[in-house]
Image (cartoon, rainbow, N blue to C red; front, top):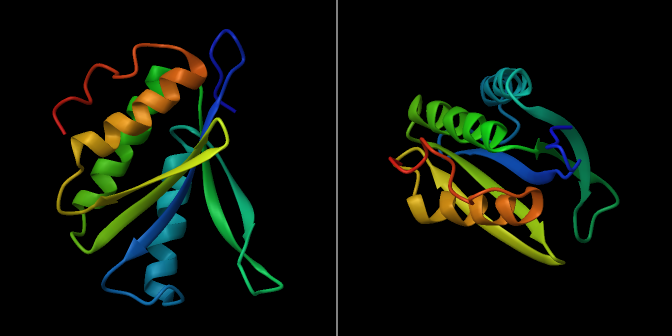
Length: 139
């Protein structure tokens, strides 16, 4: 996992969604798998099963581990590029901050600065740093 000198990491649960495809459409799954591989080349990632209420099974979610401002910036740049390729895409991001779960949805229409800022603030709180990495303010 990405870590800073203190060994701290900040994990985001990332779910990729589309307005244009059903979740089990092979074309969509191909795009999701390609992006997971692309993102894994930039930052530390792993798949984790999350239980579904009322179900014996779970759903695989992508966990992105961030341990530095550089990893955060790389993830945001990657989200922005992936969303920009298709306006029907969205990325739902969840994270835990002191036992409280937070959630934002990033869309292909635009990445909301306040949404990115809330993730940056939580990441900085966990791993240290300014809370707003250079290069992300233009979103």
